[in-house]
Length: 201
Image (cartoon, rainbow, N blue to C red):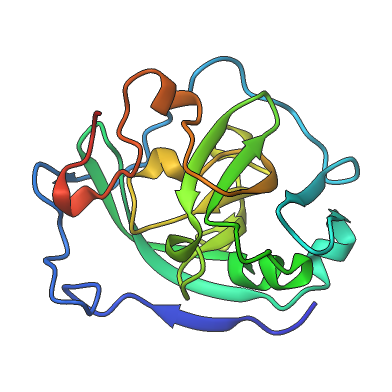
């Protein structure tokens, strides 16, 4: 496993002029557990991550292959659509842009549909999941992710509401046009920018 590179949110802001706390949010020191349905129980020995759809090379990684990729350590804030925010989350994982580079998205690929064990899906524009802070993460605050928080691996897309950071993630599908994932089909916003309060469609 390579030594992780560390990236940290600038104090007080994301560095793009926006206030650190989005409108309508409140700070929590805890980490509420919110999900629909039962918690999938996936062992690392059986975990697989697939990248497919509009790519030059469909790939499937097992846990050891995933951990052999370049690792990143990122500190970011998270913002839940239910109005809580949690500052200074330390994550270890693999940047999504590095995973996509292995599969080589085709020019017509504009969005990513994240797929999770248990059937959950959520949609994110490609350009919003390839930054320094966007990961498939396996550690939080230096410890392996608990199952209830998405272990063994979850997405982390901190610039969008936290439902976009899919728990129990098992793959990314590259698609040509936006389409709703699980919560989007039930009325959540297709995009989900916390600073614009894009909570519901």
